[in-house]
Length: 116
View: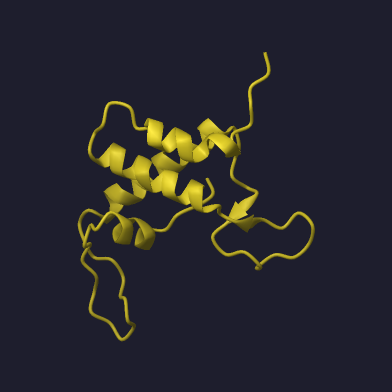
């Protein structure tokens, strides 16, 4: 599955304060015990959002400009990023319906309409 949000994005936006290793870099690797769980939640949330949009997400990338040509993927739209992070929060909080009205309203204009 295509990665459309990063663990850094989720950590920042949900204010998780995941522990990092002390390193030479400004931000070291995540060492928190919760990281594998959040990585799984990110995968699940991405799948839920892509399923709602009726797409596989291959038209978007976290790193636009790496590929050239007409069929090169574009940057992930901000509403899609926000929706995935909201679904991660809903899954983490064990909300009964992770695809909340707020998420649907973010994604509505990007959704491929169903034909009857």
